[in-house]
Length: 397
Image (cartoon, rainbow, N blue to C red):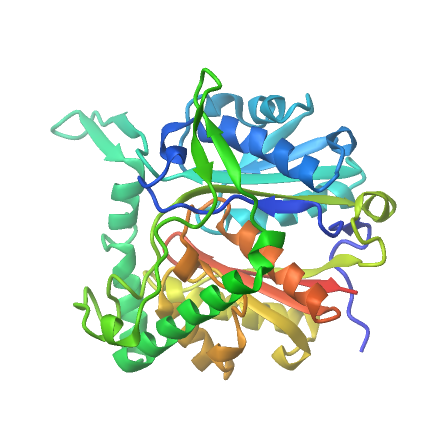
């Protein structure tokens, strides 16, 4: 069966990518720096390590969700920190930002407007800013919001916290706590096996953190805050909602991740393995019912498979952004797919969730895994802000 590509003229050159590790919020020197500046400087560092000359990049798509100092200047200031004075723009779509930024870069190349687009996603959830909003109709006249804490804890469309959406879906699909604990323990096993194998060394890059004076603050050399956890420890944790405990949900983190999207000809020039071709097959988004976030990614995958004519049997690598273990259990039920077959090289449930770069790192890991397998279709998906699901398929040849 011949499957059409979404962007016939766009490719992701192999190996022109990298991610910082994702230290848990408030645990590393990354909590103390301007994340936009750090992301630009870190991207230049990563491209140098990958022997990719940034002079080839003619446009920049950045993605972040937490306000940062000088965000008004968005991609221009980040590009300057990267050492390349090029145009670009900032986009955000909550947890879908990383994948959506890659798709937007593909569209930029496909349109013929650019030959090589840098995708640079980042977020610092540590010490997130507090905003003050005029509310003339309110009795207090002003409203104050802590960007990360208050948005995680309150969906204005439903009045519920994000974790309540996981509990709601667990009840809807009759998922049992026993399965969620077992699934979570298995995800930790996958992550630590991957770490011990050296696979992460091809994805994540140790990065030095400098203060505004350029003096060293420390190095980020691991996903700080991630520790091995036993099934017994998971079972002993208190439920915060149905099937949701402190151990079966992700944690906020800081970090960045970057990759390139280029024209077919340029991709061969930039690729570390020109014989490897990575193309865009398709993308789908859905909106599920109110406060049904963990269900939305599975519905997006259903829609995408229908659009492309593919089935999960055709897919070599399945990987997702799973802020709750419930997400994977629901996907398994909806798609009749064994959750043990997915997320073989780790997942955000374990390594953390800085929002903007999360799905970028997931995509990089998925593409590396597919290359190891000799190619195939790669399915990447996740959820975003309340009840949105996004999914995309790439092909590695």
